[in-house]
Image (tube, rainbow, N blue to C red):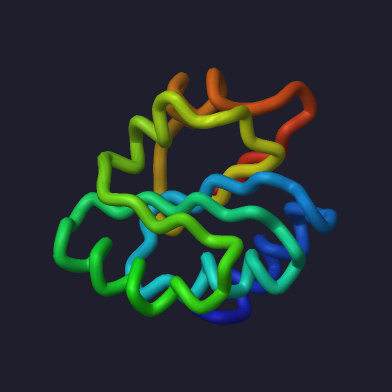
Length: 110
């Protein structure tokens, strides 16, 4: 749903240089859009094959790191994020996302 994704990306109110955690990479479309805002994007995908395909597809952007992992766990060991964007629905924001977020971070999920 491109209109819903566009509304969510706008709501994140990103600034160039913001660190964004994109959860549920899929094709990498949302990560690519986030990078256009000038964000430094880390995108996490649970399916290893999909993650590898997305990493290859997103490599030319230069400001996107595509990794294979459990998106519900976020990206342990990374620097804190200014924003989080989930491409999948959650009932509650997982604690792992909150612990990797800077104070005042925005997290959006359907």
